[in-house]
Length: 142
Image (cartoon, rainbow, N blue to C red; front, side, top):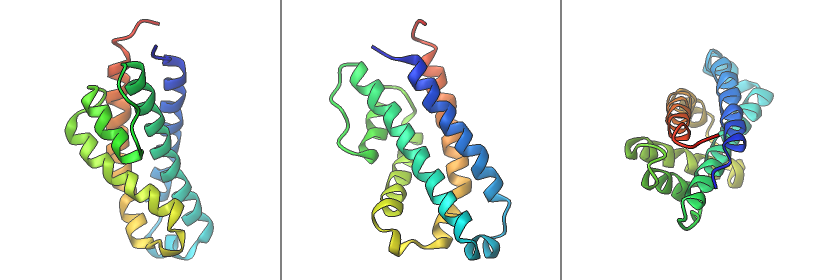
């Protein structure tokens, strides 16, 4: 059964993180690069967005009687198969799962320029993700 309230709360968290990312996007790269707090905060925002979206993908996939995704990347593929999001968007979001894994597991090798350059992409693609998931949820009562 689809728990719309839980999913809406996760969408709200994604939206909140996107608002914060928009503020970071306004910071020049050189300022960003020198500010450890801003870099850490940005990395955490990106991580939270991917994890919340993956939770949504997993919930919908399992609620529709399909097998749960094996990892973050696969969750976006499964979301597209479940018609939660479009295939094109899923392909773009799969890349963010890879970034999340680097941020979490390879934090000593993080390239500030790459992280910084993903901010506008995350804003664009996850804003669209929120729209598509909200449209999908309208199909369910409650």
